[in-house]
Structures are given as structure tokens and as C-alpha cells.
Length: 386
Ligand code: MRU
Image (cartoon, rainbow, N blue to C red; front, side, top):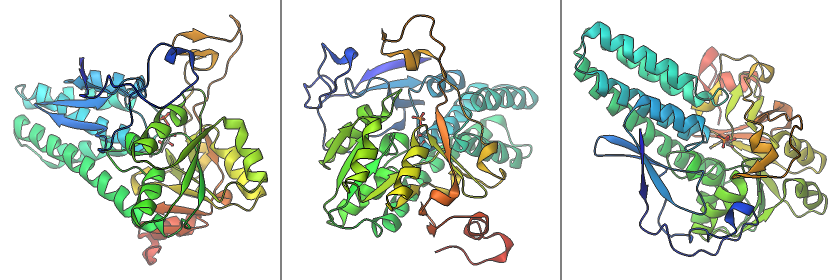
């Protein structure tokens, strides 16, 4: 079940201007100066910003069941790989708390059902199954403990996953900031910011950290059709922090790169295979190819929880296909002819060869490949990547 909670300043008139039909009669929420809490635990429930409403309204929804959290992930109330993982971890805790008065057998059965339900909510971001597996292992490791104490431990673990995500983003920011020259003009795609994580962000976290060290940068944000995470979320987030941002149509990046108006590209990731192939929001691969064409560095910022060492290469990454309505229109408006055939793959896979470097909480991996990723995880007895 989800209830809506309006944020205190949600009705202020704003200065973000988006030319989309659903915005016609409503002003976007004004940029704020305090960091946004994408998801938080309050009074026994999970509260999450409804990202579908931004930038028009900043409102939290309240969730008290795994079913509600699974639906929030599926419908993109919460989105972005690390944020999805955190939400799923809380979903497991909510299920466990609701089942705590059952017998141990009933508790474990119900918990397994919740884990399956949450796992089915979105397929591409591996942070989802990573977080669920962490919760499953914790419950299994508690042996014959009472359901109530297992439930409490699962809630504590969800808090830890959230805190660790913020810490990882901060570490990534520190490593990545060194790669950002003062005055850099940075292109990004989708939203890999605080809203896509528990806080600070991955790609936008690196940009934020660079500005915290005193560097002046400006950002070009791809609008990111069809769900407009760039136009709606990245622009809003950066304007909140007063980081200069310019919104461009997805197709405009080639012209700007060819004219020398982009110094580097930085994006997030939803899943990275063992050989470094990188799944991210559809439209990322063409940016990487163009960046190579114009000798522009192409960086991917992601926590280790996004790297799936069990998948040999990017061709094995499950790519989510979403509803046709996301492509035929937006927010209830429709512009494509009735009956037109539609494909809507939500992600694409950038070959590792096009990635200049991966920025992780453990360090920067230049020209990522199978061997360097194994070293990053301390496998094969190699030293960890720097
Ligand atoms: O469909 P979304 O909005 O969940 O897709 C999100 C992305 O593709 C992000 O770039 C990715 O999750 C990295 S988030 C730090």
C-alpha cells in the first residue's frame, strides 16, 4: 500500500522550463538547496520520492509491504540501479516484519515469496538481485533464530545497504573528481544522480564531488527519451545544487561533440558484465561510439554492486522491454498514430572497448577488461585495481 506525502515546498512555483504537454498548466517545483532523500525509513514504513511526478511535484509515497515496493519499482516511482537495490532490501524487511508472528516455516515461506516478487519487478539492474541475495543470505545465516529477530536483522541490513550506497558514491566521487578538468563541459545521459541512488549519485556524484573541490564545470543533459529522466530529473537535481546545466535533445549530442563542445561523457550503469560490457539507459551506446569517434573520454561511474561477475559478456544481460505507451506519448498525451508497431528496449549495452574508465568506490579502472575486473574484486590473487 502506498500513501502520498507532499514535501513541504512541493507547491512552490519553479523556474525549470520543460516543454512537455503534461506540464502545460503546472509550474515545476522550485530547485531547493538541501539534498534530496530519495528513500528513507520513517515510523515503520519506507518513504520514497515519486520520481514520476518530478519536476512538477516533490512528493513522497509511503510503503508498508513488499507488494507495494515491488509495484513502485515496476512503475518507476523509484528508479536507477542502486536506488532500486535499496528499495528492494527494504521490501524484504517489510515482508519479514509483516510475517514475524508466523511459525518459522510459515515465515520462511512468506519471505521466499516476497523475494521472488521483488526479483521479478525489473530485470536489468543487477543491484536488485544483489540486494535480494544479500538479504536471503543474511536470513539463511541466522539459522534457527526467531522470526521477529530475523525481521529486525533484515531491517538493519536494509539500513546498512542504504548507508553503504551513499558512502560508495562519496568514494566514487573522490576518485572520479580527479578525472574532471577545471572548466570541463560534461555530457551525461539519463539520471545517475542522488535520485538514482540512496544519495549523492554515481555519475552526478562525480560531478558534484568535482564542484566541491572548487572546479567550475557545466553539464549537458540529454533529455533521455522515452521517460525523460535527463530532462525531468538530472536538470532538476543539478539546478538544485546550482551546477550549470543545459538540456539538449538526445540527437543533438553528435553535433556538439563534432564541434568540440563536449570535453567528456560520464554516465551510470545498470549492469556490467565480467568483461566490462556495460548496460545503461538506451541511448548510451551511441554516445560511447560518438565519443570514440571524436576522441572524447567516456567514463562509467558505478558501485561494485552493479558489476555482475557471473555474466560472461554483455550479450547475456537481460534487457527490459517496457510498455509501448512510453514511446507513443507521455503523461497521458499521445502523438504516435493508433495501431503503430512499437519497440521499447529500456537499456543498451556499450562494448567495454568504448569505455575509457570505470569509476568505482574501490578506484578507477582504465580500459576495463575481464582481467582488470577480476583484479578489482581481488580474484586470481591479483592486486586490486587502482
Ligand atoms: O530506467 P531507469 O531510470 O531505472 O534507468 C536508470 C539508468 O539507466 C541509470 O543510468 C543507471 O541506473 C545508473 S543510476 C546511478
